[in-house]
Length: 120
Image (cartoon, rainbow, N blue to C red):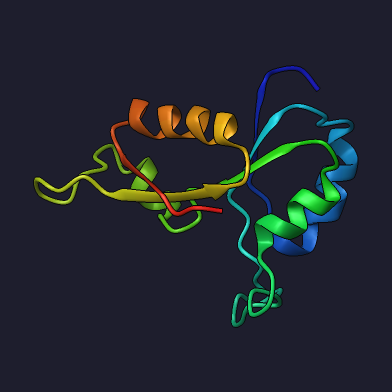
């Protein structure tokens, strides 16, 4: 796969297949927008003792995984105006690779949102 930054935006049930199709993500910054919801979006299937990002990192061997954008609705991003009145929406992001988090923080800022580093 070409590119240094890869965005993973799939439904949780499709995660494994999408990563299998992606091929090697070794050394890539992988921005995961995946929420671990069941088929009907009625409940979390994981997240009480682990996280979606941890699962993505286990499956995407060698990728530098940063979880981001999964708390902001796609409709907001596509609306033409990402502000709420004068307020800029915040995007939480987390990961265990400082360099990858810096890349994602810059991406968040470049689209006019406020990035908040939520840690590891």
